[in-house]
Image 1 (cartoon, rainbow, N blue to C red):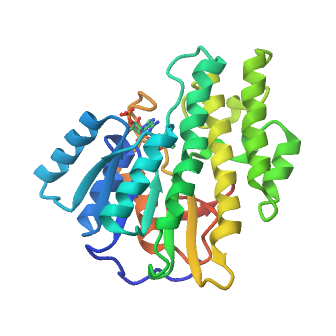
Image 2: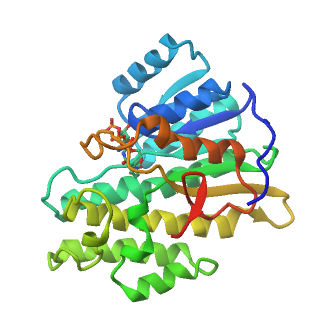
Length: 298
Ligand SMILES: NC(=O)c1ccc[n+]([C@@H]2O[C@H](COP(=O)([O-])OP(=O)(O)OC[C@H]3O[C@@H](n4cnc5c(N)ncnc54)[C@H](OP(=O)(O)O)[C@@H]3O)[C@@H](O)[C@H]2O)c1
C-alpha cells in the first residue's frame, strides 16, 4: 500500500472529531493531541463536551478546543463550519466518529430514523459542510476518516441487487446509496420487515444484538458506500491540484457504551486505525475500508 508519510503535522495542523466526549472519539482526540496537533473535540451535549475537554487539559493536553456539534442537526453543522472558518480558516483532518445503535429491541421508524440521521445522513452532511474547509496544501492531501463497522460489510447483506450495486464502487453514486438507505427506512415504516430480511445477523461475529444490529449494519453499509462515492468525486479534482483522502474503517470490537459490553478491546486499540489513517494516509488507500491498519473487504 505504499510507504508511510513522514511526520508532516504540527500544532498548526487542525483536526476535527465528532462524537468525542467519550469512547473511541475521546481517545482519538487524546491520541491526536498527544501528537501535538490542534484538535477540535465536538459533542452534541455541551456539558459532556466541556467535561471531556477539562479531562484532557488535566492530562496536560492544552491544544484541544471544544465546539458543540449534533451531527443530526444541519443548523448545528453549519454553526460548527462557520466557527471553524472564523477560528482556524481551514482544517486538515476530519474524523466522523459519532455513531449510535438502537438501545432496545423496539425497531420502529421512530427508533430507526435517528440511527440513519446519525450514522449515515449525519456523516454525509458534516463531511459536505466541512469539505470546503479542508486544506489543499496538507502534505499528501487532506484526510477524512469515517468510523464505520465491519457489520456493514456486503457479505451480511441479503439483497443480491444491492450487493451488486455497492460492489461496483467506481460507478456507485450518492443517489444509489441514498436509495438504499431510504428503501430500508420505507420498509421499516411499512412495518412489514422480519428479522433477517435485510441482513444475515446469524453469520455476524460477536454477540448477537438482534434487530437493532440490523439497522446499525444497514446504516454502516450505507456510509461505507458513501466513502467510495466521496473518493470518486474528491480524491483528485482535475485541474485544481486538490487532493482529499477519504477512508472508512472499523475500530474492531471495543468495550464502550455503544455495546454495553465488556470483553472487547480497549479504546486505545479502537482509536489506533482511525488515528493512523489520519496521520499516515497510506498511498492507494483512499476510498477503501480499513481495520487493524489493513484494507479489508467492503
Ligand atoms: N465499540 C465498538 O465495538 C464499535 C465497533 C464498530 C464501530 N464502532 C463505531 O465507533 C464509533 C464510536 O463508538 P463508541 O464505541 O465510542 O461508542 P460510544 O462510547 O457510545 O460513543 C458514541 C459517541 O457518539 C456520540 N453521538 C451520538 N449521536 C450523536 C449526534 N447526533 N451528534 C454528535 N455526537 C453523537 C455520543 O454522544 P453522547 O454521549 O451525547 O451520546 C458519543 O460521544 C461509532 O461510530 C460506532 O458505530 C464501535
